[in-house]
Amino acid sequence: MQQSCCLRGVRKSYVRSVLILGAAAVVVGCSSGGQVGPQTKPYLLPIPSASELARPRTPEQAGLPAEATRAAIPRDNPQTADKVALGQKLFFDGRLSADGTVACSSCHDPVRAFTDGRRVSIGIKGRVGQRNAPTILNAVYNTTQFWDGRARTLEEQAGFPIVNPSEMGQPNLDAAVARVATVREYRKAFERVFRGPPNSSNLLRAIASYERAEVSFDSPFDHFIAGEKDAIDPSAKRGWALFNGRGRCTTCHAVTRGQPDVTTFTDHRFHNIGVVIVRAGTVGMARQAEQVVTPGDMGAVDRTAIQSDLSLLGRFLVTRQDADIGAFKTPNLRNLLMTAPYFHDGSHPTLWDVVDHYNKGGDQNDPFLDRDMQPLALKEAEIDDLVAFLASLTSPEYRKPALKELARQRKLARTTRPYRDTARAFGPKPGG
Image 1 (cartoon, rainbow, N blue to C red):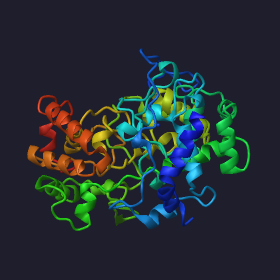
Image 2 (image 1 turned 45 degrees about the horizontal axis):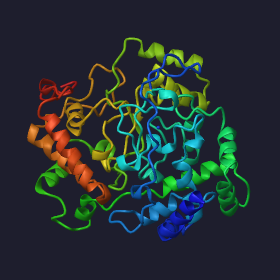
Image 3 (image 1 turned 90 degrees about the vertical axis):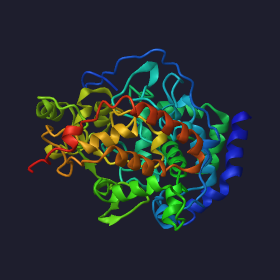
């Protein structure tokens, strides 16, 4: 009865937003051979619950691109209120994992803007992964999923964590379906939504539909772009100018298909920005990956990315192109204050650390460093302004905790800056 009420309540509360959205229509191991990472204790953390922040978002938000949102809904999986409600229930249910201790929300907690606040994510039995959990907010607009783009769709993405031994640990999707099928209310919900009993395909379609309903805009910056000149403060305005100018941020973060785009703040491409610690054997690791990971086997890529040190190869694991060694997907910049720590490995604790990294041009000794990475010579006040701009991308539901997090990061940045290198930032640019 409790589950039935939950499903029914979500349907009733958010039916309008979901129907509008669909109407037109993410650890340290040793090898890639199926081994799992080490354990961390205590690892039996409670599964985050479906709080108010978990609700599907209304499309009536400043900055939300209605046409692009409708276009992003696949024809073979249209949005419906019942399907999104079912997907939400599954997203927070530990029964999808082998031991019942991990749900999708364990790594994608709505309180943290659907991330987990850890450097890298932790799965069943405390198994530690290699990658930082990306947010699912606005994932509907992604052209690929995961840091290395190994999944093309949200349906594909939803399946990998369920069967990864270091995440939810099921032997296969059918095992997860079998657990769900024992619950009467789930059987009724699948029958209502899909006209049949639970199966793996429809389980993933439901979860993907819920994720597509999590769109997050309406930030101060969105209101500023819409013409409200005082929606952001002078520091953020200066930061926006730097973002478009000497900060060189738009090289990757506000261009889509060659055109300016402040919807996603990503070019949907993959870059080596010099975050990975360069190892003398990087090319040798690539050759090793070619031997142990079958080309085109995205399940093997998934296991390697989460369980193995070969994870640092990034996009190379998918493409087998040397130019993609250490390349990772350009992330969305919205609600960044809620998604710390940063980068694919969670190595940078604050936004000041992130800007410090770019200010020095990344690791110039990385042989595969993106050619657009170069020292920026930004002064401290300008770094503060860039952070102020990034903070202005916070949606209203996260405003209060984001302000608290901004204060925490600012205080830390005044005393601890491990990635700062002023000499390099103001030194000659490569080839100069």
